[in-house]
Length: 259
Length: 222
Image (cartoon, rainbow over all chains, first blue to last red; front, side, top):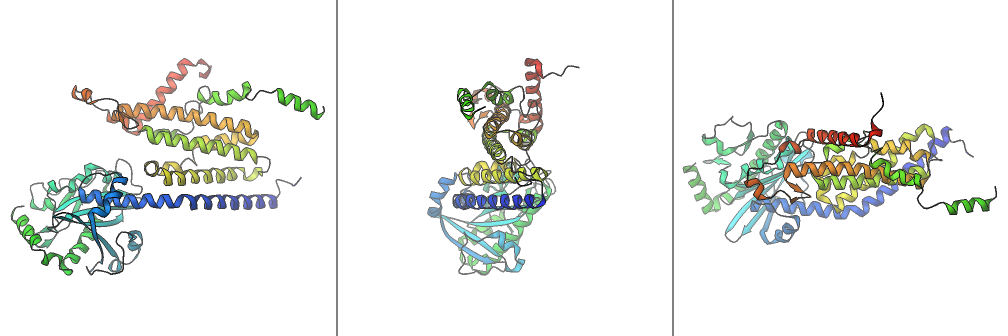
Protein backbone atom coordinates (compact mmCIF):
# COMPACT_ATOMS: atom_id res chain seq x y z
CA UNK A 1 0.00 0.00 0.00
CA UNK A 2 1.33 3.41 -0.94
CA UNK A 3 1.81 5.94 1.80
CA UNK A 4 -1.19 8.20 1.36
CA UNK A 5 0.33 10.96 3.40
CA UNK A 6 3.59 11.27 1.49
CA UNK A 7 4.24 14.44 -0.48
CA UNK A 8 4.64 12.70 -3.82
CA UNK A 9 1.35 10.81 -3.42
CA UNK A 10 -0.45 14.05 -2.54
CA UNK A 11 1.01 15.82 -5.57
CA UNK A 12 0.23 13.01 -7.99
CA UNK A 13 -3.30 12.63 -6.62
CA UNK A 14 -3.96 16.36 -6.99
CA UNK A 15 -2.57 16.46 -10.52
CA UNK A 16 -4.63 13.49 -11.69
CA UNK A 17 -7.78 14.90 -10.11
CA UNK A 18 -7.33 18.30 -11.73
CA UNK A 19 -6.68 16.80 -15.16
CA UNK A 20 -9.78 14.59 -14.89
CA UNK A 21 -11.93 17.53 -13.82
CA UNK A 22 -10.47 19.63 -16.64
CA UNK A 23 -11.38 17.00 -19.23
CA UNK A 24 -14.90 16.64 -17.81
CA UNK A 25 -15.53 20.39 -17.90
CA UNK A 26 -14.18 20.71 -21.44
CA UNK A 27 -16.58 18.03 -22.64
CA UNK A 28 -19.54 19.64 -20.87
CA UNK A 29 -18.66 23.05 -22.28
CA UNK A 30 -18.43 21.68 -25.83
CA UNK A 31 -21.86 20.10 -25.52
CA UNK A 32 -23.67 23.02 -23.90
CA UNK A 33 -22.09 25.96 -25.68
CA UNK A 34 -24.07 25.75 -28.93
CA UNK A 35 -27.56 25.93 -27.37
CA UNK A 36 -26.30 28.65 -25.02
CA UNK A 37 -25.01 30.81 -27.85
CA UNK A 38 -28.29 30.32 -29.70
CA UNK A 39 -30.23 31.59 -26.67
CA UNK A 40 -27.95 34.62 -26.42
CA UNK A 41 -28.54 35.38 -30.10
CA UNK A 42 -32.31 34.99 -29.75
CA UNK A 43 -32.26 37.27 -26.75
CA UNK A 44 -30.47 39.92 -28.78
CA UNK A 45 -33.21 39.77 -31.41
CA UNK A 46 -35.79 39.94 -28.65
CA UNK A 47 -34.21 43.07 -27.16
CA UNK A 48 -33.85 44.85 -30.51
CA UNK A 49 -37.43 44.10 -31.51
CA UNK A 50 -38.97 44.94 -28.17
CA UNK A 51 -37.26 48.35 -28.31
CA UNK A 52 -38.53 48.85 -31.86
CA UNK A 53 -42.08 47.75 -31.05
CA UNK A 54 -42.22 49.20 -27.57
CA UNK A 55 -43.57 46.01 -26.03
CA UNK A 56 -42.34 42.82 -24.49
CA UNK A 57 -41.99 39.80 -26.76
CA UNK A 58 -41.03 36.24 -26.06
CA UNK A 59 -37.72 35.06 -27.47
CA UNK A 60 -39.47 32.68 -29.85
CA UNK A 61 -41.84 35.39 -31.15
CA UNK A 62 -38.97 37.77 -31.69
CA UNK A 63 -36.98 35.13 -33.52
CA UNK A 64 -39.78 34.72 -36.06
CA UNK A 65 -40.54 38.42 -36.51
CA UNK A 66 -36.98 39.69 -36.65
CA UNK A 67 -36.39 39.40 -40.39
CA UNK A 68 -39.89 40.69 -41.10
CA UNK A 69 -39.28 44.01 -39.37
CA UNK A 70 -35.55 44.64 -39.28
CA UNK A 71 -34.83 45.49 -42.88
CA UNK A 72 -31.39 46.99 -42.70
CA UNK A 73 -28.45 47.43 -40.39
CA UNK A 74 -25.38 49.60 -40.43
CA UNK A 75 -22.09 49.96 -38.61
CA UNK A 76 -20.40 53.32 -38.21
CA UNK A 77 -17.54 54.81 -36.23
CA UNK A 78 -17.50 57.64 -33.68
CA UNK A 79 -17.04 60.18 -36.49
CA UNK A 80 -20.28 58.95 -38.05
CA UNK A 81 -18.63 57.38 -41.10
CA UNK A 82 -20.24 54.15 -42.20
CA UNK A 83 -17.90 51.15 -42.05
CA UNK A 84 -18.40 48.53 -44.72
CA UNK A 85 -17.88 44.82 -44.27
CA UNK A 86 -19.10 44.72 -40.68
CA UNK A 87 -22.17 42.89 -39.48
CA UNK A 88 -24.12 45.03 -37.02
CA UNK A 89 -25.83 42.04 -35.41
CA UNK A 90 -22.61 40.18 -34.69
CA UNK A 91 -20.61 43.24 -33.74
CA UNK A 92 -19.12 42.43 -30.32
CA UNK A 93 -19.57 45.64 -28.35
CA UNK A 94 -17.61 44.24 -25.42
CA UNK A 95 -14.59 44.04 -27.73
CA UNK A 96 -15.32 47.49 -29.16
CA UNK A 97 -15.29 49.01 -25.68
CA UNK A 98 -11.71 47.84 -25.22
CA UNK A 99 -10.54 49.94 -28.18
CA UNK A 100 -9.81 53.64 -27.90
CA UNK A 101 -12.99 55.66 -28.20
CA UNK A 102 -12.19 57.10 -31.62
CA UNK A 103 -11.78 53.60 -33.09
CA UNK A 104 -14.94 52.04 -31.65
CA UNK A 105 -17.74 50.92 -33.93
CA UNK A 106 -21.46 51.42 -33.38
CA UNK A 107 -24.32 49.23 -34.61
CA UNK A 108 -27.60 50.53 -35.98
CA UNK A 109 -30.70 48.56 -36.96
CA UNK A 110 -33.46 49.88 -39.20
CA UNK A 111 -36.99 48.80 -38.34
CA UNK A 112 -39.61 49.03 -41.05
CA UNK A 113 -43.32 48.27 -40.81
CA UNK A 114 -45.12 49.71 -43.82
CA UNK A 115 -44.72 53.47 -43.56
CA UNK A 116 -43.18 53.38 -40.12
CA UNK A 117 -39.40 53.54 -39.85
CA UNK A 118 -37.44 53.49 -36.62
CA UNK A 119 -33.73 53.43 -35.90
CA UNK A 120 -32.50 51.16 -33.13
CA UNK A 121 -29.10 51.79 -31.59
CA UNK A 122 -27.27 49.02 -29.81
CA UNK A 123 -25.33 50.23 -26.78
CA UNK A 124 -22.98 48.88 -24.15
CA UNK A 125 -21.38 50.53 -21.15
CA UNK A 126 -20.33 49.96 -17.57
CA UNK A 127 -22.50 49.81 -14.46
CA UNK A 128 -21.32 49.30 -10.92
CA UNK A 129 -20.41 45.59 -10.90
CA UNK A 130 -20.11 44.88 -14.58
CA UNK A 131 -21.36 45.66 -18.05
CA UNK A 132 -24.75 47.19 -18.82
CA UNK A 133 -26.23 47.25 -22.30
CA UNK A 134 -29.38 48.21 -24.09
CA UNK A 135 -31.21 49.25 -27.23
CA UNK A 136 -32.87 52.59 -27.87
CA UNK A 137 -35.34 53.13 -30.70
CA UNK A 138 -35.53 56.56 -32.37
CA UNK A 139 -38.46 57.63 -34.54
CA UNK A 140 -37.97 58.47 -38.22
CA UNK A 141 -37.81 62.18 -37.33
CA UNK A 142 -34.38 61.20 -35.90
CA UNK A 143 -35.32 63.07 -32.76
CA UNK A 144 -38.12 61.48 -30.73
CA UNK A 145 -37.28 58.52 -28.56
CA UNK A 146 -39.71 55.66 -29.17
CA UNK A 147 -38.62 53.18 -26.51
CA UNK A 148 -35.55 51.68 -24.91
CA UNK A 149 -34.64 48.60 -23.00
CA UNK A 150 -31.67 47.84 -20.84
CA UNK A 151 -30.04 44.84 -19.28
CA UNK A 152 -27.06 44.16 -17.08
CA UNK A 153 -24.80 41.38 -15.99
CA UNK A 154 -24.78 41.69 -12.23
CA UNK A 155 -26.12 44.98 -10.91
CA UNK A 156 -27.56 44.90 -7.39
CA UNK A 157 -31.13 43.57 -7.31
CA UNK A 158 -33.55 46.28 -6.21
CA UNK A 159 -30.99 49.02 -6.91
CA UNK A 160 -28.96 49.15 -10.11
CA UNK A 161 -30.77 46.12 -11.50
CA UNK A 162 -33.94 48.24 -11.72
CA UNK A 163 -32.72 49.58 -15.09
CA UNK A 164 -34.25 46.51 -16.71
CA UNK A 165 -37.62 47.09 -15.04
CA UNK A 166 -40.54 48.90 -16.71
CA UNK A 167 -40.37 51.60 -14.03
CA UNK A 168 -37.10 52.79 -15.57
CA UNK A 169 -37.59 51.78 -19.21
CA UNK A 170 -41.06 53.28 -19.55
CA UNK A 171 -39.51 56.71 -19.10
CA UNK A 172 -38.26 56.28 -22.65
CA UNK A 173 -41.77 55.70 -24.02
CA UNK A 174 -42.98 57.84 -26.91
CA UNK A 175 -45.72 59.29 -24.69
CA UNK A 176 -43.04 60.74 -22.38
CA UNK A 177 -41.89 63.00 -25.23
CA UNK A 178 -38.15 62.46 -24.83
CA UNK A 179 -36.09 63.99 -27.63
CA UNK A 180 -32.40 64.05 -28.45
CA UNK A 181 -32.32 67.52 -30.05
CA UNK A 182 -33.40 70.91 -28.82
CA UNK A 183 -34.02 72.63 -32.14
CA UNK A 184 -30.90 71.71 -34.04
CA UNK A 185 -28.70 71.48 -30.97
CA UNK A 186 -27.72 67.97 -29.87
CA UNK A 187 -28.75 67.22 -26.27
CA UNK A 188 -29.00 63.44 -25.99
CA UNK A 189 -30.65 61.80 -23.01
CA UNK A 190 -29.25 62.29 -19.53
CA UNK A 191 -30.06 60.10 -16.52
CA UNK A 192 -30.04 62.24 -13.41
CA UNK A 193 -31.45 62.52 -9.92
CA UNK A 194 -35.17 63.07 -9.87
CA UNK A 195 -36.09 66.70 -9.44
CA UNK A 196 -32.79 68.18 -10.59
CA UNK A 197 -34.49 69.33 -13.76
CA UNK A 198 -38.02 70.59 -13.21
CA UNK A 199 -40.65 68.60 -15.09
CA UNK A 200 -42.05 71.82 -16.53
CA UNK A 201 -38.68 72.90 -17.94
CA UNK A 202 -38.11 72.35 -21.69
CA UNK A 203 -34.87 70.61 -20.70
CA UNK A 204 -36.96 67.80 -19.21
CA UNK A 205 -37.35 66.38 -22.73
CA UNK A 206 -33.71 65.31 -22.52
CA UNK A 207 -33.78 63.93 -18.99
CA UNK A 208 -34.92 60.69 -17.35
CA UNK A 209 -34.92 59.99 -13.63
CA UNK A 210 -32.13 57.88 -12.23
CA UNK A 211 -32.58 55.12 -9.67
CA UNK A 212 -32.31 55.88 -5.97
CA UNK A 213 -29.50 53.80 -4.57
CA UNK A 214 -28.31 52.96 -8.05
CA UNK A 215 -26.37 56.12 -8.79
CA UNK A 216 -23.29 54.48 -10.31
CA UNK A 217 -25.43 52.29 -12.57
CA UNK A 218 -27.57 55.31 -13.55
CA UNK A 219 -24.45 57.33 -14.35
CA UNK A 220 -23.13 54.44 -16.43
CA UNK A 221 -26.38 54.27 -18.39
CA UNK A 222 -26.33 58.05 -18.83
CA UNK A 223 -22.77 58.02 -20.17
CA UNK A 224 -23.61 55.13 -22.49
CA UNK A 225 -26.71 56.87 -23.86
CA UNK A 226 -24.84 60.13 -24.49
CA UNK A 227 -21.97 58.36 -26.22
CA UNK A 228 -24.07 56.25 -28.56
CA UNK A 229 -26.58 59.01 -29.33
CA UNK A 230 -23.73 61.38 -30.16
CA UNK A 231 -22.27 58.86 -32.59
CA UNK A 232 -25.74 58.43 -34.09
CA UNK A 233 -25.99 62.21 -34.45
CA UNK A 234 -22.67 62.24 -36.32
CA UNK A 235 -23.81 59.34 -38.51
CA UNK A 236 -27.19 60.94 -39.31
CA UNK A 237 -25.44 64.15 -40.37
CA UNK A 238 -22.62 62.54 -42.36
CA UNK A 239 -24.70 59.93 -44.11
CA UNK A 240 -27.20 62.53 -45.26
CA UNK A 241 -29.98 60.73 -43.38
CA UNK A 242 -30.95 63.99 -41.71
CA UNK A 243 -30.87 66.22 -44.82
CA UNK A 244 -32.41 63.85 -47.32
CA UNK A 245 -35.38 62.99 -45.18
CA UNK A 246 -37.70 65.95 -45.77
CA UNK A 247 -40.37 64.43 -43.63
CA UNK A 248 -37.85 64.03 -40.85
CA UNK A 249 -36.99 67.69 -41.15
CA UNK A 250 -40.66 68.63 -40.89
CA UNK A 251 -41.02 66.50 -37.80
CA UNK A 252 -37.94 68.12 -36.32
CA UNK A 253 -39.39 71.58 -36.87
CA UNK A 254 -42.80 70.66 -35.57
CA UNK A 255 -41.43 69.20 -32.39
CA UNK A 256 -39.25 72.26 -31.80
CA UNK A 257 -42.22 74.54 -32.06
CA UNK A 258 -44.36 72.53 -29.68
CA UNK A 259 -42.16 71.38 -26.85
CA UNK B 1 -15.92 -16.92 8.87
CA UNK B 2 -16.07 -18.33 5.37
CA UNK B 3 -16.99 -16.24 2.36
CA UNK B 4 -20.16 -18.27 1.92
CA UNK B 5 -21.65 -17.11 5.20
CA UNK B 6 -20.81 -13.48 4.40
CA UNK B 7 -22.66 -13.82 1.13
CA UNK B 8 -25.60 -15.36 2.93
CA UNK B 9 -25.71 -12.56 5.48
CA UNK B 10 -25.56 -10.00 2.70
CA UNK B 11 -28.41 -11.62 0.82
CA UNK B 12 -30.71 -11.49 3.78
CA UNK B 13 -30.12 -7.78 4.16
CA UNK B 14 -33.13 -5.89 2.75
CA UNK B 15 -32.60 -3.25 0.07
CA UNK B 16 -33.33 -0.43 2.48
CA UNK B 17 -32.58 -1.09 6.12
CA UNK B 18 -34.15 1.00 8.84
CA UNK B 19 -30.82 2.83 9.07
CA UNK B 20 -30.93 3.62 5.37
CA UNK B 21 -34.46 4.94 5.65
CA UNK B 22 -33.40 7.17 8.48
CA UNK B 23 -30.71 8.65 6.22
CA UNK B 24 -33.47 9.96 3.99
CA UNK B 25 -36.14 10.82 6.53
CA UNK B 26 -33.96 12.41 9.21
CA UNK B 27 -32.90 15.43 7.15
CA UNK B 28 -36.54 16.08 6.29
CA UNK B 29 -37.41 16.84 9.90
CA UNK B 30 -35.20 15.92 12.89
CA UNK B 31 -31.97 16.88 11.18
CA UNK B 32 -33.12 19.33 8.53
CA UNK B 33 -30.14 21.11 6.96
CA UNK B 34 -31.78 24.55 7.11
CA UNK B 35 -33.92 24.57 10.21
CA UNK B 36 -31.84 22.30 12.46
CA UNK B 37 -28.30 22.24 11.09
CA UNK B 38 -28.76 25.90 10.05
CA UNK B 39 -26.75 25.47 6.84
CA UNK B 40 -27.47 27.04 3.46
CA UNK B 41 -29.47 29.91 4.89
CA UNK B 42 -27.99 32.42 2.44
CA UNK B 43 -29.56 30.84 -0.65
CA UNK B 44 -32.79 30.23 1.26
CA UNK B 45 -33.09 34.00 1.54
CA UNK B 46 -31.88 34.86 -1.92
CA UNK B 47 -33.72 32.61 -4.36
CA UNK B 48 -37.09 32.22 -2.69
CA UNK B 49 -38.89 35.27 -4.08
CA UNK B 50 -40.55 33.00 -6.62
CA UNK B 51 -41.15 29.27 -6.73
CA UNK B 52 -39.55 28.66 -10.12
CA UNK B 53 -35.97 29.73 -9.29
CA UNK B 54 -36.31 27.98 -5.91
CA UNK B 55 -37.30 24.79 -7.73
CA UNK B 56 -34.30 24.94 -10.05
CA UNK B 57 -32.00 25.86 -7.19
CA UNK B 58 -33.28 22.84 -5.25
CA UNK B 59 -32.66 20.56 -8.19
CA UNK B 60 -29.17 21.99 -8.57
CA UNK B 61 -28.31 21.47 -4.91
CA UNK B 62 -29.87 17.99 -4.94
CA UNK B 63 -27.77 17.00 -7.94
CA UNK B 64 -24.56 18.45 -6.52
CA UNK B 65 -25.18 16.84 -3.12
CA UNK B 66 -25.86 13.37 -4.51
CA UNK B 67 -23.03 13.42 -7.02
CA UNK B 68 -20.61 15.08 -4.61
CA UNK B 69 -21.38 12.54 -1.90
CA UNK B 70 -21.06 9.68 -4.37
CA UNK B 71 -17.75 10.79 -5.88
CA UNK B 72 -16.13 11.66 -2.56
CA UNK B 73 -17.36 8.41 -1.04
CA UNK B 74 -15.99 6.39 -3.98
CA UNK B 75 -12.51 7.87 -3.67
CA UNK B 76 -12.57 8.33 0.11
CA UNK B 77 -9.78 5.82 0.61
CA UNK B 78 -7.57 7.52 -1.98
CA UNK B 79 -7.86 11.10 -0.75
CA UNK B 80 -4.79 12.26 1.20
CA UNK B 81 -6.26 13.69 4.38
CA UNK B 82 -4.02 16.78 4.26
CA UNK B 83 -5.66 18.05 1.07
CA UNK B 84 -9.13 16.60 1.56
CA UNK B 85 -10.88 19.96 1.85
CA UNK B 86 -9.33 21.17 -1.39
CA UNK B 87 -10.23 17.91 -3.10
CA UNK B 88 -13.83 18.27 -1.95
CA UNK B 89 -13.86 21.83 -3.18
CA UNK B 90 -12.55 20.86 -6.63
CA UNK B 91 -15.19 18.14 -6.95
CA UNK B 92 -18.00 20.43 -5.83
CA UNK B 93 -16.81 23.28 -8.04
CA UNK B 94 -16.68 20.96 -11.06
CA UNK B 95 -20.20 19.67 -10.41
CA UNK B 96 -21.55 23.18 -9.92
CA UNK B 97 -19.94 24.31 -13.16
CA UNK B 98 -21.68 21.43 -14.90
CA UNK B 99 -25.02 22.50 -13.41
CA UNK B 100 -24.38 26.11 -14.40
CA UNK B 101 -23.52 25.19 -18.00
CA UNK B 102 -26.52 22.89 -18.35
CA UNK B 103 -28.87 25.56 -17.00
CA UNK B 104 -27.37 28.16 -19.35
CA UNK B 105 -27.89 25.89 -22.31
CA UNK B 106 -31.32 24.43 -21.56
CA UNK B 107 -32.97 26.83 -19.09
CA UNK B 108 -31.56 30.17 -20.16
CA UNK B 109 -34.10 32.39 -18.37
CA UNK B 110 -33.73 30.53 -15.12
CA UNK B 111 -29.96 30.71 -15.33
CA UNK B 112 -30.18 34.47 -15.79
CA UNK B 113 -32.47 34.72 -12.79
CA UNK B 114 -30.30 32.58 -10.55
CA UNK B 115 -27.16 34.31 -11.89
CA UNK B 116 -24.50 34.19 -9.20
CA UNK B 117 -26.44 31.90 -6.88
CA UNK B 118 -25.69 28.80 -8.93
CA UNK B 119 -22.00 29.52 -8.48
CA UNK B 120 -22.66 30.00 -4.80
CA UNK B 121 -23.82 26.37 -4.47
CA UNK B 122 -20.05 25.77 -4.20
CA UNK B 123 -19.97 27.66 -0.94
CA UNK B 124 -23.30 26.28 0.28
CA UNK B 125 -22.36 24.85 3.64
CA UNK B 126 -24.74 21.91 3.21
CA UNK B 127 -22.65 20.48 0.39
CA UNK B 128 -19.25 20.76 2.04
CA UNK B 129 -20.78 19.85 5.38
CA UNK B 130 -22.21 16.57 4.13
CA UNK B 131 -19.02 15.65 2.24
CA UNK B 132 -16.88 16.22 5.31
CA UNK B 133 -19.27 14.77 7.88
CA UNK B 134 -20.71 11.83 5.98
CA UNK B 135 -19.30 10.93 2.57
CA UNK B 136 -15.68 10.76 3.71
CA UNK B 137 -16.52 8.05 6.23
CA UNK B 138 -19.25 6.03 4.51
CA UNK B 139 -19.81 3.70 1.59
CA UNK B 140 -21.26 5.05 -1.68
CA UNK B 141 -24.76 3.60 -1.08
CA UNK B 142 -25.47 5.34 2.22
CA UNK B 143 -23.65 8.45 0.91
CA UNK B 144 -26.11 8.73 -1.97
CA UNK B 145 -29.04 8.31 0.42
CA UNK B 146 -27.57 10.97 2.69
CA UNK B 147 -27.27 13.27 -0.32
CA UNK B 148 -30.87 12.62 -1.35
CA UNK B 149 -32.13 13.15 2.20
CA UNK B 150 -30.30 16.40 2.77
CA UNK B 151 -31.11 17.67 -0.71
CA UNK B 152 -34.80 16.97 -0.16
CA UNK B 153 -34.72 18.51 3.30
CA UNK B 154 -33.20 21.65 1.83
CA UNK B 155 -35.61 21.69 -1.12
CA UNK B 156 -38.61 21.22 1.14
CA UNK B 157 -37.84 24.32 3.20
CA UNK B 158 -36.78 26.32 0.15
CA UNK B 159 -40.03 25.58 -1.68
CA UNK B 160 -42.13 26.19 1.41
CA UNK B 161 -40.59 29.63 1.86
CA UNK B 162 -40.87 30.37 -1.87
CA UNK B 163 -44.56 29.39 -2.01
CA UNK B 164 -45.40 31.67 0.92
CA UNK B 165 -43.37 34.55 -0.48
CA UNK B 166 -44.68 34.32 -4.04
CA UNK B 167 -48.27 33.86 -2.89
CA UNK B 168 -48.36 36.83 -0.54
CA UNK B 169 -45.80 38.96 -2.36
CA UNK B 170 -47.09 38.65 -5.92
CA UNK B 171 -50.32 36.64 -5.61
CA UNK B 172 -49.05 33.87 -7.89
CA UNK B 173 -47.54 30.39 -7.66
CA UNK B 174 -45.11 29.41 -10.39
CA UNK B 175 -46.36 32.50 -12.22
CA UNK B 176 -50.01 31.40 -12.24
CA UNK B 177 -52.33 33.90 -10.57
CA UNK B 178 -53.85 32.47 -7.38
CA UNK B 179 -55.26 35.60 -5.84
CA UNK B 180 -57.65 36.80 -8.52
CA UNK B 181 -58.71 40.21 -9.75
CA UNK B 182 -61.80 40.08 -7.58
CA UNK B 183 -59.73 40.11 -4.40
CA UNK B 184 -57.75 43.09 -5.66
CA UNK B 185 -61.00 44.86 -6.50
CA UNK B 186 -62.20 44.24 -2.95
CA UNK B 187 -59.18 46.13 -1.68
CA UNK B 188 -56.68 43.30 -1.17
CA UNK B 189 -53.09 44.37 -1.72
CA UNK B 190 -49.97 42.28 -2.39
CA UNK B 191 -47.57 42.60 0.50
CA UNK B 192 -44.31 44.02 -0.88
CA UNK B 193 -42.45 43.01 2.26
CA UNK B 194 -42.71 39.36 1.26
CA UNK B 195 -40.63 40.05 -1.84
CA UNK B 196 -37.76 41.49 0.21
CA UNK B 197 -35.05 39.24 1.74
CA UNK B 198 -35.87 40.01 5.43
CA UNK B 199 -39.23 38.29 5.06
CA UNK B 200 -37.49 35.04 4.11
CA UNK B 201 -35.66 35.17 7.41
CA UNK B 202 -38.94 35.69 9.26
CA UNK B 203 -40.58 32.79 7.41
CA UNK B 204 -37.64 30.47 8.13
CA UNK B 205 -37.92 31.58 11.74
CA UNK B 206 -41.62 30.74 11.83
CA UNK B 207 -40.94 27.33 10.27
CA UNK B 208 -38.32 26.60 12.95
CA UNK B 209 -40.82 27.69 15.62
CA UNK B 210 -43.58 25.46 14.30
CA UNK B 211 -41.18 22.54 13.88
CA UNK B 212 -39.87 22.81 17.45
CA UNK B 213 -43.26 23.10 19.02
CA UNK B 214 -44.26 19.91 17.19
CA UNK B 215 -41.03 18.02 17.68
CA UNK B 216 -39.99 18.24 21.34
CA UNK B 217 -36.78 16.27 20.66
CA UNK B 218 -35.25 19.34 19.07
CA UNK B 219 -35.49 21.45 22.18
CA UNK B 220 -32.28 21.22 24.16
CA UNK B 221 -32.83 20.42 27.81
CA UNK B 222 -31.30 22.99 30.07
